[in-house]
Image 1 (cartoon, rainbow, N blue to C red):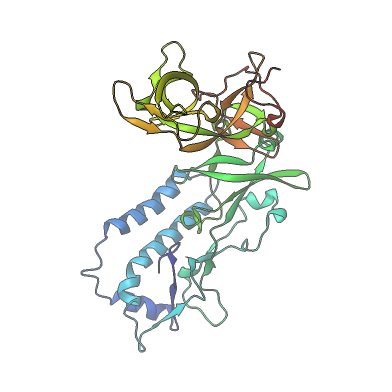
Image 2: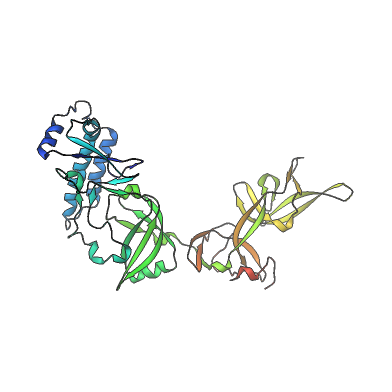
Length: 375
């Protein structure tokens, strides 16, 4: 089985014979058909070489040995299906099954039981670091490790940080990071850990473990500046319900994009229908739907499409979170999009069409304010 592959029942292979006998078995294997590299096989070998090239440093020759071991392990995978897959009772090879499902990793380095509170800066020095590739061992005897099994999706990255980064992370509960190994980005829950006089950032994730299970060290970039916006207290935010009106039933207001006009049809006590225009505030627009004040209409009201007899029954609602803008001396609800938050504050987008702008004044506690209240 290939390394860092998730299976419901993983298998690994061992030999009870000498290294020379195993090599003889591989050399006598007919590779006339299977010896040709598939596109996937070639990609795996290229990835191993590219990973080494991108992280090359003349100060750290250990990576050269790691790359050699990775390529040898990848080449060994090419023979697995043909040689090990046909193993029988008389074969040199034995198939061993794991105790349960998970990600098989064929290396150990002594860091398997290290916890966040145990991490020190010395552990980040590659000079003394050694990773043992278990697949390259000649033979295995009883009690020898053959693999390690990763059984959870939750994992953490630990990195040393300076006081400036500590202050930037203090008000954040999550960050975006970029993995330099493959250029992908991901969101992680962040916390700051202090071990003696050193601060570390602890990044918790519940995804991507299968891609990096065989890596002890990763080069990443903290994208701290990607969470830019307006900082507001969480107490200022309120959740409100709104009626949804399709765009085809509204008349746009050229003078004020925050308002639309609709033709409302109502019925008198005698059953006679009446139609009249009503202008209402827009709090959000999603796709082709407008969000309007639920207090401006009654459930079951009909609005009539302009120059048509088509009618729409007002009943569908949706919720928005927002704050009360008090620029004009009275409270006006404005929708906000939260892009980052901690226990006390949050960062909201500053480019929402119907949201907040820099230097707007808002009520700090939404529970003490109502719409249109004079302040």
